[in-house]
Image (tube, rainbow, N blue to C red; front, side, top):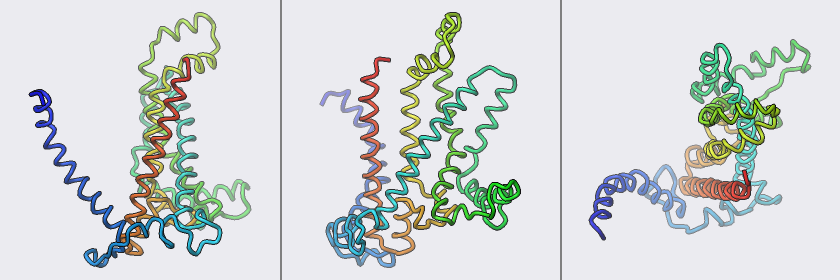
Length: 304
């Protein structure tokens, strides 16, 4: 090992040790718990059960008691809910965020004030915004239901956060309201770096604005846009707080993180909950890996 490499490892050593203590040890303990039947009431009394928490008869990926198969199990439902939420919310946030960013990138009076106002939903803590929307959507005293009834849109008030048919999509709507500013901010930062002379040339040549967007703007911001989508996708797949506050983690909306919390805290099953936590981590990692791989192939094939 040459002196330069030795010096690099020497400087990295404190960081590596800190990471090992902060992340490595808890991860190792979680792996051990997932292979045992440890209970939260006495974490020292757990027995080794191998992969029973994963593939056993009553494991995460077992089907005992569920005649309809894996997707009828609580874990299967939580996976389906999480991916439905992630795909729909990220798609809407990306499209709306792009539209807002394009608008804020234009020159108009009061643009600075509008940019600041747009960021307000994102600046509000998730718990606060969830409680706020929970009150507004309440089927007894919520202002949204009152407006819908007064305007004749619905005949009777709707329990948006309690009815299984509406609950998940209500969470999606609230998440979109809160997170569109984040996407808009990231996309706007990319738009601000684009060279203005290209747009001047397109304007002089009389190119239609939609063609300018598809042939110039979108190809130039596709990499920053991909980064923004990946960030949101990873965040959406581990959603917990918004669902928990709005719907109390009901079976119609429970996410993978909510499932982990329920098994560990409510049921006290530390072994089963740890197995779910590790499975959640693996699912997020594999999803991100596949998404990045697909996006990289798509970008490589795109001549723009």
